[in-house]
Length: 317
Image 1: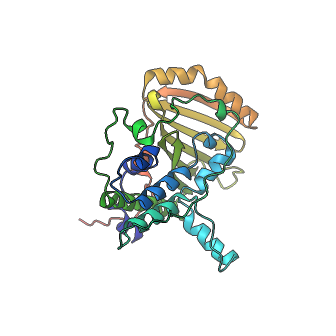
Image 2: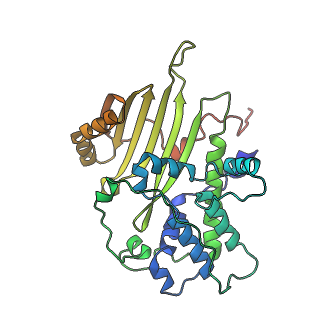
Image 3: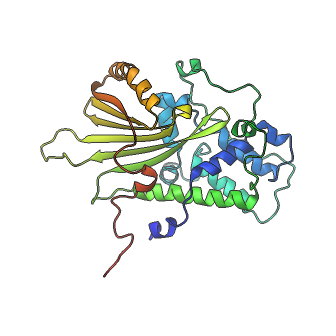
């Protein structure tokens, strides 16, 4: 029933993330914004609390990004209530919690014209990677989020009004809810987690599709280890869409990459030994590592993450 209620409402996250990045730009405070200032401040806090792409290159940073992706908000709230009744949980870095706060402010019956500043939310404090600090980025100091999203200087989202933003947030929350329902424990299907990670990169927000599942096709009762697979979907800037499938059995890991651009596939294969070296240094035994041109054999995870959920639509002829 929850799926039937939520499925008609999800929307693509990127328009909302683009608007949040635009509102987070310093230029938003210098020009007349179509939204009340407290709304802009909440959007800026939501943007600042996102894990950066540099932080996500570390194990601690990636764990932080997954933990605050919104997938586990209710679980953490429930555990906090049980462990410390009467104490509010410091979940201000959670993406879903930030969306709920922003929606509450947008739907407030009275205009938000108070003079006091919105409550300050602590920024993300995950340490940057020593390696990632040396990565060159194309950002220009002082460039605003709005300008980076639209180098011509025009408003990238002229429809950015309170009702439009509220509708985008409703769609994003419904999408999160569907992913949570798809990841619920089900004895009739193998373990599966579908997570979408918004990551802050300069004045942009990148979105990584992450799917973690247990492979039961090769399961035998006497098997000591279970196969796990991790699928990634991301936009690699000028390199185009990039997909990865990582399979893990014990300490042996294999990686298959797909690149839509031929030049990207050639570049990945020329540098595949760097991936092998890093996996070996992390303590893994490497199996097959390669990149090929094209798309994965299955459809995009955006549309197939509900595979295996039955009885959603009952038909009879």
